Structures are given as structure tokens and as C-alpha cells.
Length: 196
Ligand code: GTP
Ligand code: MN
Ligand code: MN
Ligand code: MN
Ligand code: MN
Ligand code: MN
Image 1 (cartoon, helix red, strand yellow):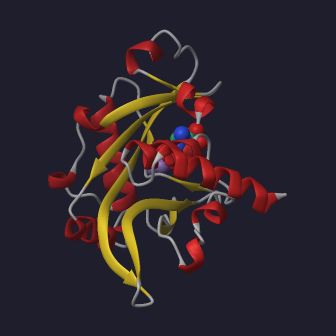
Image 2 (cartoon, rainbow, N blue to C red):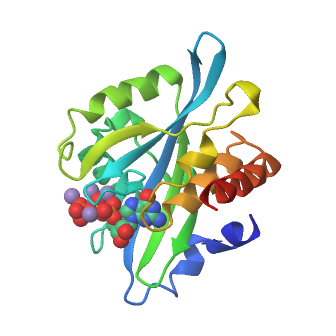
């Protein structure tokens, strides 16, 4: 977890680091879930991710245009990619930190919705402008525990994620207390073992 946490910086620290980097913003949208799998397993939470046009998994969001306000650009991308309605838009209070790579500064946001509202947002994805183009799949991240204490998250984390999306997922799951830091550490170990 150390290296993951240390990757995230505050927005004002990124201003000096921007240089030739592009600026983007993406968001972790989630809700509690009352859904029960196999009549016995609580699904616990719905966390929204997407399959992108390039085959990788990422969060909805995108590039901020030159001179565009970051939250304005984020909401514009969320409208284009998942059809997000204005009443569900994000604001500065949802900002959690920024991820800097040699090419990109990605401002990251987290927002919790009521279950009914996230389900409504999910249904709207098929109506979004970019559905079937930039966005080729809507998915929920598995954070439940199967029988015999088996967890699907270690396998899920072996998918191919775009840029810092995997770190953002791990980080946000811990930030939102969907899983504790020690549970997440065990999951990362298990995920690595599945790969070996
Ligand atoms: P266009 O509308 O086609 O311009 O794409 P976009 O504006 O939606 O941009 P996109 O979301 O594809 O990503 C912009 C940049 O952010 C690219 O450099 C991606 O590699 C990167 N990126 C995409 N998704 C994520 C994500 O979930 N997390 C992070 N950290 N970076 C991402
Ligand atoms: Mn995008
Ligand atoms: Mn886009
Ligand atoms: Mn793109
Ligand atoms: Mn765009
Ligand atoms: Mn686009």
C-alpha cells in the first residue's frame, strides 16, 4: 500500500509538475448494494468501471480541454461516456487526489450514490453518446466474498487496466472503507500468487 499511497498528490502540488503533460479527470462512482448472489452472498457494493475502446479497463472520465474548469470537464466526459444526468454531477468536494505519470496528470474523484440512483445511472449508459464507441462495456467491480472465504477481487485485479486505474481502484476501495487496508493487502498478495 505504501507505494500506492505515495503516488497520489494534491492538486496544488501538480500545478508545478504539469509541464507538457496532458490533464485528465476520472471518477470512482459507487453505491451500497443490497443484491444477494446465490440466495446467500451479499454483493455489498456496486463500483462502476468500463471497458474502453482500447480493450483496457478504466474509470469514466477523460481529457480536460485547454482552459476548461476541471470539474466542468469531468462532468462533460461523464455525460458523454455514461450519460450522467446533471443532478448526479460531481463537484470539488468529490476530489481525492491526482496521479502523475510522465505523460499525464489525472485528477481523481470519488462519489457515493444511493443504490437506486447508481442503478439509474447504469441504465443510462446504453443511451450515452459514446456507448459502443469509446465505451464498450459497463462493469461492476466484485468486492464480495464467496463461500470458503474465496474472493473474486484478486482475479479481477489481473485484468489489463489503463494508466493508473488499477492503483486508483485499490486506493479508493480502501478510502471508502469498502475493504480495510489489511484486507486489501491480503488481496494484493493473493492476486500476485494467482499470477505466479
Ligand atoms: P477522447 O474523448 O477520445 O479524447 O478520450 P477521453 O477524453 O475520454 O480520454 P480518456 O479517458 O481515454 O483518457 C485520457 C488519458 O487518461 C489517457 O492518457 C489515458 O491513458 C488516461 N486514462 C484513461 N482512463 C483512465 C483511468 O481510469 N485512470 C487514469 N489514471 N488514467 C486514465
Ligand atoms: Mn474517457
Ligand atoms: Mn471521453
Ligand atoms: Mn480517449
Ligand atoms: Mn474527451
Ligand atoms: Mn470523446
